[in-house]
Image 1: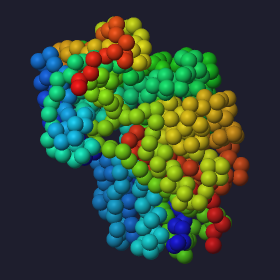
Image 2 (image 1 turned 45 degrees about the vertical axis):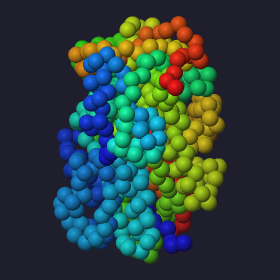
Image 3 (image 1 turned 90 degrees about the horizontal axis):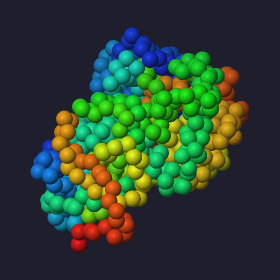
Length: 390
Length: 139
């Protein structure tokens, strides 16, 4: 097997509700930082890979390459939509480097859905089954999709209303508590059980504190061939396994017709990633999951095989998901409390953790992280591992 | 997003306007292809029949909306919306409004009825006093 590509550069425009900047500007700032972090120049980037639905509208690669003087790019690719696509793009960037085509490849994601809060609703409304069939019935907006998934989960697994509420609270409180230790988290107000119960219900059983933020922000990552790594770090971060899996992802197959609470694509992608890496779940020190809603964390913990089916309430209990807990999860605060960068921030957090640079929220001895996104019909599971630099 | 349903849902909406619930079934393999795909998700055939179903079904899941996230013309919170799985077309789920704020029970039998609304034709459900296993089904 070819030598693993090293993640040499990370740049972030931290999530905020209103940045006053366009997504393209935020992308550019994060890319400059990532390229500097990698210790290279923009003209050394030979490949660019991006997510396929939001990025082409907000920060298209052609525009970014011109603006930043990425003049020697000879390979460009786009992956799949939204969260799963962001992780998928990093996987493809690694594959391009590992194939020998490029010494340095760039991937980035930027979004302005903090400034433009109608972004997610517009994204969903553009799908005709939603506009024509679902919205007139009042089945409108992502919180409803996941509220229905939560109810179905409780029914299938025999959870009482109270047990469901306690489980969702544990996820929301875990994310918030982790965010308090992140200097750039968007939401920095502590949350306890009483606070959670005081949070207004949006679509029962989901409360405002079960719903992700809206954010402006960006993340850029440079991956390099080991022999071309000029980042001068003692340790590197590699991607020993990743996979994307999909049921039909067109608009005809969204949540109303999904097999919730199961996530077959997540299960399939995880199996594949784990087996590529030759690892087991016990090797994983922390996980960063696409927590658009608290229930999404629950569904993924089970679909990915971390918690047994129907057992998430026990798995998430108390301080289990804290960065200091038994199962450190969304150690930056996730989409619920760090920011809604659709999972790009989850990649950034895993890199920071594996570099050992996470400060107060550092998971001690973190060597392997699992990042997962797209908890609907498509999913990417990606493993990162800390290795000694050559 | 590709392979969307744009334009393919018109027969369904037209059916609702006429007071009927009609669902596409693949002519070649009899798969209920819902929401409709250009190519049948089971056998890739492009030909389908629109079949009138009884409207009887089972509550799959539901939520009570307390705060409007995406405004729907003429609809105000609180309201209940449910996904109803059709007895005639296993696996096909239709979103439907509740007529009141009584909590539906997942797994219980209901009947869907087309209704006109300011947001367009849709369905509402009401409970029926029938055992789920006794629901009449299309042959």
